[in-house]
Structures are given as C-alpha cells and as structure tokens.
Image (cartoon, helix red, strand yellow):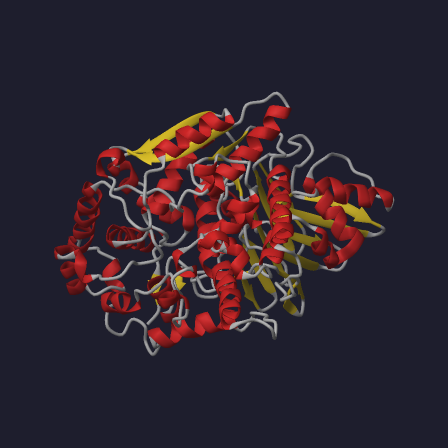
Length: 612
C-alpha cells in the first residue's frame, strides 16, 4: 500500500517540484519506506511507498515501454492474482524484471489496455501516464477499498490518495459550500459517492476508471452487480461460499513483510484468523493476532440487544483454539479522547468519532511489530449482518436505515447554513440515486427486491464509510489492512443468493455460519453478532461533554460557523435532547459530542472557509 499523487496540465506544469514534494510529504505516513517522482513537460507524478511485495524491485514511479510508447505508473494497492496474470502475460511473450504486482499491473495495461481491469482481483487505485499519447488513465478497484480523489480544471487535473495532498496544489482551496455542509452534517460520517466535500474535489467511485486527455476526463463504470437467477441448492451454495471465503483469505496472506490478523472473537475475524492460522501451521509458522479493549470495560459493560456480551472471553477461546500469538491492546478514556483530533486529520474529515480514534490507536500499536494486517470488515454489508436487514419496521422505510437522526441533526444547524437545500429531500435524493442502480429479476418477491436494494445501499454507502475509516486510520501509521470479505467475486455471487439462504436458521449472516461449519467451535460460529468494541466507561461521556463546552466557550470557536451555539449548550446540559443514534449502532450520545470535537479540529486544521 502506498500514497500517490499527480498533476497534468496541457499548458505545462512548469516548476512544480515544490508542489509535488509537498503533496508527497502529506502522504509520507502511507508510504514511509521511500519516495519517487516523475516529471515531464505536462505531467508530474509522486509516489510514497510502503514496501510489502518485492521490496527490492517495486520502486515507483515505474516505467515500461512498448515500441515507441513509454508508460509511467504510480499505484496504491495489492493484486491478489498476480501470479495468474504474470503467467498469462509470459505466455504472450512479456518478460519481468522482478516479482512485484506493480510491474504486472503496468504490463497488463500495456498488453490489454483498459480491459486489464477485467482481470484484476485486488484493491487498487492507480494512474498510468502515456508519454506519446499524452493521456492519463485513472482507475479504482471494484469495491472502493483504495481511495482516489481528483480536481479537474480547464486543461488540467490534479489527483491524490488523500484530500490533504490535493490541498497542497495552488489552485485548490479549503472551501466548502452548502452542499459540503449538507454532506458533513446530514450524511456524515458518510459521503455522497464521488463527492470530495471540498469545493471542486471529486472522488473516483468504486468500479470507476477514467481517461484524461486534452478533451477532459471521460469516466466509465467498468464493473457492476447484475441480477441473475440462483439455481443452486443450499448445500451447493454453502460449499461455494466456503470456497470463495477461504480462497480470498489465503490469497491475502501473501506478503514479504510481517503479517497478522485482527481477532475480536466474533464470526468474521475468527473465520479469517482460523483459516490464516491453519495456513501458517502448514508452513511451520505461528500466526499473530491482535484485539482491542478498553480499561475497566469489564466493570462498566452493560449488555444490550446490539452487544449482548463482552468479546474478551471469546478472544481467549479463539486464540487458544487456533494457537495464535495474541496481543490485547487496551485503551483508556483520555488517550481515546485525545486521539479524536488526530483521527479526523488522518481522515481529512470528521469521521466516526471514537470508533475512528480507537482504530487509529490500535493500528499504531500493531505497526510496532507488523506491516500488514487482515481484518473482517465488509461481511455485514455483503451477507446481511446488520440489524436493519432483520427489522422490517426499518427495512422498508425511506432513506438510509442506519441514519434515522435527520430531525436531530437539522436541529443542531445554524439557521441558513444550508441555504436553499431541503435536508429531507437531499437525503432522499442521495438514497434514490443509489437505488436506481439496482438490478432485479421479474421473479423477485417484494422482500427479495428490497434486499437487493439494501445490498446496494450498504455497498455504496455504509461499507464505504467503514472502508474510508479502515484505510485512513491504518495508513496513518503505514499499516496495510486487507479485507478478504470485500473480494468482488464474493459480492457478485452473494448478490443473487436468496435471502432465505443468507438468513439460514433465522440468523444474521446465517449462510456464513453454516458454510464455515467445522472451521470454528460451534459456540463461536453461532455467537450473536457483536459490533466493533467501544468503551462503556461513563467517564467518556463526561469527558467529551467537557471538551465540547470548552470548544463552545473559546472565542475562536469554529463549529458555531455551522452549528447553533444555543442548541449546543442545551445539548451539553441534557444529551438526551438528541433522541436518535447519530449513525448506525455505535454512534450514540457520546459520539455526537465526539463528532463535534472532530468537526472543530478539522475546521481549524484546514482553515476551512464556508462559502455563503
């Protein structure tokens, strides 16, 4: 994994070395091992490298020629079918200097052009400059795991892995308009697909590629989910799911640097860790696993329908079962709260509050011993693990099922800050844009149709929020985190599996549980879903309220540019006036205050200008 940036201007990029170095420097945490640059008359590229595969021969920018055409690539990501593609290219007469996936990806583009994307199994965002044609090809992986932002202007384009790098370009200013405010305050921590919040900044969406030339950027979607009849029996479906999951996990264990797995004692991370441990055992190696917890959580934990029991006993059970070398990382309230600001800066936007800051600190600890980790994100979106899949009162309501707090959010806003944007219409429009991309079968029942829609909403919205979180919090420390459940082959297959199969035995992710029988102990296999662990310390709420009060009382307070000061004071006095969860299961009353703290940190750090 790495950080990439570039600038193309057909009028000439001039003496842009200072700008490119500044962009690269902001991406240094993503790529702490080395940096490289490419300059030509109208193109400049920058790369920061985190060396994972072939450290000796994978330096970037990387060059390759065919005839009188020379190509230059900067690439962030990992291909999991590198060797298959390499063999295919060798059969066509292509040779290789090393074993890096970067060289395979670039050679694939030379051999097949844009059609190379159809062959890739991986996570990636890359740019390829063709010197003779003077064109820039940009692409992002099918599931949107790796980020790629850009800013287009007449005759030019600037792109980067993160927003902070783009803001180093001279023509891009930290300005947000009413639409940006709407994204932050009505949708946040989610973002509208393709929208970069700052004025003029966009993001390649998942499965998008584009060619930039003197005629501008022409984008297209190169992959999508298609509705097809599922003809297999339950048993055949279980066998296929077991194969796809196991294959995805095994592919993602390839690394030339130390690798570990996250282990929460829940279904998803336990499946990954069990398969990984078995593979390591064949090689005479011991897998390292990591978990996260909070000081005094054993004293403060309160069972709920969302989180029925603590993870700790299950983690011990699984670590013993697979024989891993386990490390438990414990965080306290102060460091969790202190990290809210740094986590927002790592994300370049206010995010998932302490759900972000805890992962930020967790990744810091893992990086002390490992460069690559494997995690269980995306299983719930793809296999129907969240409560809103199983609660029909929520399931068929308009809007996003994880965001029922619009009335509370609007109540916090400073009058007039949204200009003429109607908040409810804005949210419904965003939701309906995604629903319009859903494919159905004529034979689908109303429930099956809705489950296809839920699949699309979760893939394009909730999952993207979590992938943003994972990428920014991990790469802030130069840690690569892989997500096997996000394999596009799994998504393509599961999209067409009947809901009665997915909810086998009436359980969330029932199909995964039945498919992986024998891989885990039965009690772990059928343990009720428990979300990402968060602190249950009552002092955390007191701490974030105190910090919010301090922000409001500061004469240089920035959040009151967007939020109503009187309403914020009322909220501090009585948090229960905010009646609904901010976002999903994990962002409740404490996280509303934590989000405000992150918003203040972001407005200050980037000196954000709010366009009236």
